[in-house]
Image 1: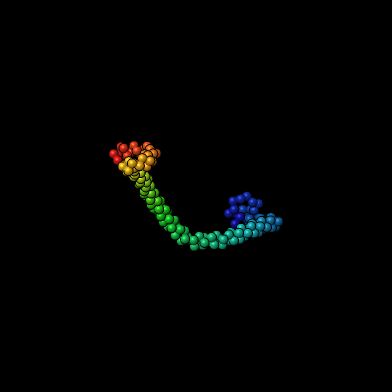
Image 2 (image 1 turned 90 degrees about the horizontal axis):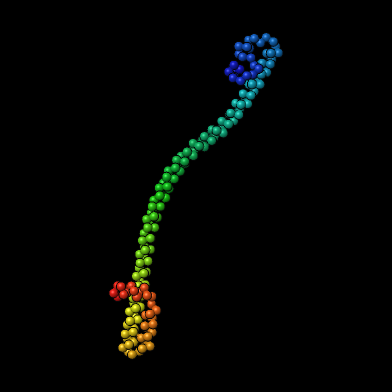
Length: 161
């Protein structure tokens, strides 16, 4: 075994063992081989000790691998659903904006109709009051007519109302 090691030790090479003739040199070589054997046994024990841990981890990984595949499939489905929901939300948002514009137009229209009805009420009130010779009431209607927004008067004049 000493011949296979690449580090420089004081052990003689396999061929050099034949040249050991002195009992002290043989004992030293034997002690070195025993020490090396002990180190290798310790290293092997450490490797074997870690082997069970690694095998446990590997078996754990093998157990959760199907779950990871399911998780991958579920995450792809979730991503697809989120994308679909996002598109749907954008469409709904667009519709809400259109409805908001329509609501604003309807509100403006209702306000205009109310203003026109108010103008009509004032003119009818002035005519009725003048026919009944109730000049105070006619003056009240004229005052109310003059307090209306000029934009309303212009818009109804332009539209011929």
